[in-house]
Length: 224
Image (tube, rainbow, N blue to C red; front, side, top):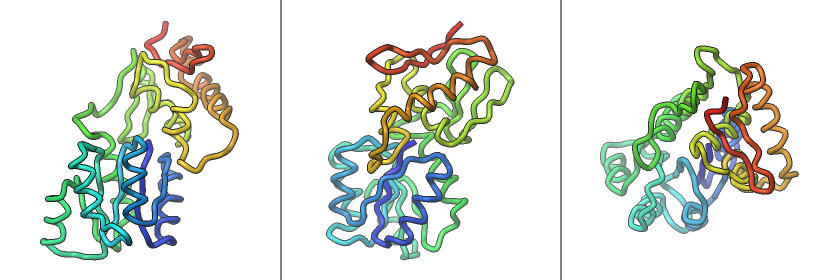
């Protein structure tokens, strides 16, 4: 699950990014409104966390311009302001949710998961691929009634495949989904996580749902 965090308080931004990464989110950072608007326009995100008081372009303007351009990625507004009029302005410009600073990190994560589940359009609470169930909001996976424990990064890769079930998803697309914008490591790390997923969701159940399409990428299907 990929998040764009637009926040000019760098210490707070780094802390939130670190915490969300531990929850399985891939987080890109922008420190002003213009950079945030550009990144939101050029990349595909599951959710955007947008501060209101930003240099160069405030959060209200960023949100308004995205909506005017037809970008309906869910937006969570963050602000040090606290008041009914500020909340109303955030929602009127097209934001989906609003959280005042200082905020509870637990509440932030719970609300982001709810926004990710809904997406820019209505989405199912969970994704079913045969008897494999992937729950993006709860970050849970099960085969039939058997719960399968996954690491946050394993889940992020699986979710990237499950949201496009039956389609071939390239290695670069999975990197974009599960790792942040600044990742410059070995792209073959994807293969490591694909192998780990096979050992957990396929091998113990005698299934072959995670398919390698040579030279193209990977496909998640119901399997045998």
